[in-house]
Amino acid sequence: RFGAGFLVIFGLSYSISSWDLGMSLEPHWFSTLWALYFFAGLALTTFAVLILWVWYLKRNGYYGDVVNENHFHDLGKFMFGHTIFWAYMAVSQYMLIWYSHIPEEITFFHSRNQGAWWYVSVFLVILRFVLPFFLLVKREWKRNYNYMAIISVLVLVGQIVDMYWILYPTMHHGDFIPFFWQEVGPLLFVFGSYVLVVGKMLERQQLIPVKDPRLEECLHFHQ
Image (cartoon, rainbow, N blue to C red; front, side):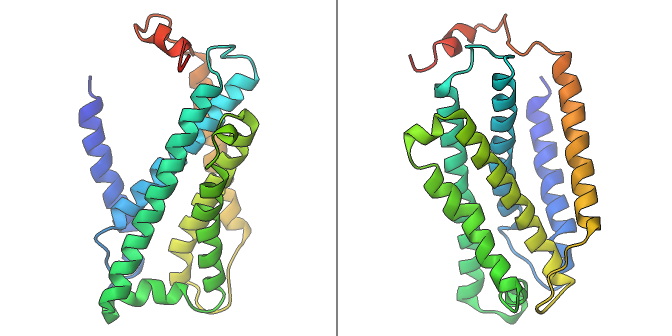
């Protein structure tokens, strides 16, 4: 009942967070597509996490025959579509800044196209778009449970590299690419906390909505 209002609050708060925590690192730089770029990454990551949860529950027998390859196929199509959407946002943001060539606007990409960070930029494009795009093209691949789980992990790694690429070049220039235990610790803490909380919530919930009027339609999905 409160979902629609929460979506508005979430959209505003997430946009403000992306500006405060990301764009503010470059005081004189701005991008009108910044929040949309973050939302594209969020949508792609959401489907990757969803696929991993469904894969885990399916593998351990929680879903039985309720979830089949048709469901994974559709989840894979969603992830494929949002991979293209992320690339569209990234290229649109880059092209607008490159085309105008205004000194105040090029600082963000200039620091990320210099020294060792150029290799990180290329690696990000390959990991975030090229690999997921070609690995999700074929229909048969998207219907394979284990294959989709591996692609989802690849997408999550791409999201981590993306955040690293956004935040660190502002503080570390040149050929030095920092990577310390301080980066790994918070990441593992957030990951562990998320798995613990969601896992506990799933233990108390009915995984199959038995009273949902659309359950029968879902059970015979694409059949």
